[in-house]
Image 1 (tube, each protein chain N blue to C red):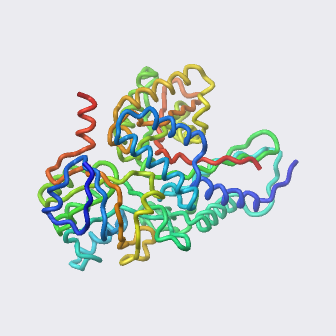
Image 2 (cartoon, rainbow over the protein chains, first blue to last red):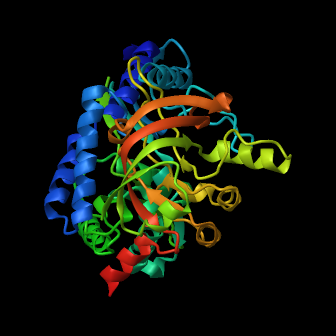
Image 3 (cartoon, chains in turn cyan, brown):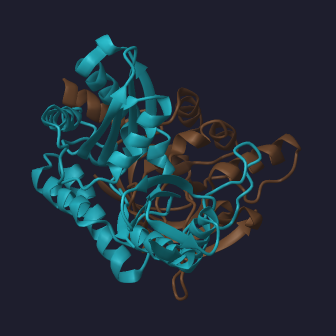
Amino acid sequence: MRIVHTNAITKAIKEMCIEANLHLTEDVTNRLKKASLMENSDLGKKILGQLKENLEIAQKDLIPICQDTGMAVVFISIGQDVHLEGDYLETAINEGIRQGYEEGYLRKSVVNDPLLRENTKDNTPGIIHYSIIPGEDIEITVAPKGFGSENMSRVVMLKPSDGEEGIKKAVLETVKLAGPNACPPMVIGVGIGGTFEKCAILAKKALTRNLEESSKEEHIKRLEQELLKEINQTGIGPGGLGGNTTALGVNIEIYPTHIAGLPLAINICCHVNRHVKRVL
Amino acid sequence: MDKYITTPIDSSKVVGLKAGDYVYLSGKIYTARDAAHKRMFEALQQNKELPFDMTNQVIYYLGPTPAREGQVIGSAGPTTSSRMDKYTPTLLDLGLKGMIGKGKRNEDVIASMVRNKAVYFAAVGGAGALLSKCIKSSKVIAYEDLGTEAIRELWVENLPVIVVIDSNGNNFYELQMNSINS
């Protein structure tokens, strides 16, 4: 059994919140570079150039890539042979978010009650997804999620007979509805299967997977590629101002489901698809 | 077509701007987003004054990140405009001439823009670090308790924006989509 003090988790979360908001991971920046070479609209090319320049300024001058530094989504997987010491885990995670958003000059965008809407002034609480894994490691992913794109996301309870065609139709409809609102070029996270809530978590998790890593399932990998191609044929383009770069990638995660259902979640993200992973 | 425009903007300046124009905007503009709009709307319902005179002004739908020492402002890109649609026709009737945001507007807003001769610009979403470089001064003038959602008076130089909806109601998002689909 390994003993880990929760102070280490607080520190890691703090650093990851800051890092995620100032640097995009290489998979996303590579896709942006590739897109600017393939873009067929002059205005689209110009916007992709500005996004590239924006990333350089963010890194050089320590200004967040986007002013919406998001609600902090944390996936934490804890080895079952780990014993935690110190603060209650949830307290330690939220303390990390609190320190990260303060010390990193990040925007505090969380309100305490969805109707009363008073800003908590420290961006807590985060959205935390826990899981238990074999072994002694603690794996953490911090994915700050902006709401311009989050607001355009959907869960659809399809029928089994809707199949692959139904999935494609719903994803394309969602992307078209999002259009310029979701800051294209987008990254599309798709969750298929499970239950109503499971597919939504899968879609979020899909956004944290490296864009260069396709699904291990052949039929899902094909679906990812076909959807990306079809999304880029909608013409929405960078900034929604026309072009063939509407999405940088489509990641799909699946899970077993019930004989009567085909739950589908589409979590839209803008090009600022932040996700930092660490193993403690 | 590239154009250089200085605020304030009256109707004669607005009618010269056409959907698809690439505009470098300079001068004084104001920030206001969800909570500030709600509060201004409530002030009007109670016959109270607004924090600034809307006549010929431009609102930027922005909630910036905090500035580090030595910086004027933090990351400063546009937020989704449609969340302000409920309040916008009222502000246009009071003389507001321009809005900067991103994404679609509803029919009520567009009708009011045509009636009041106003213009809607989009700035590039997700480019807040780049856009912050065009902001030369920033000061909170109202609703300080709202934090990032407070109303700020900004001085901008050559802020790059695109006319998405012009004062005749031409919508560049739709024009682009139609030309691609035809």
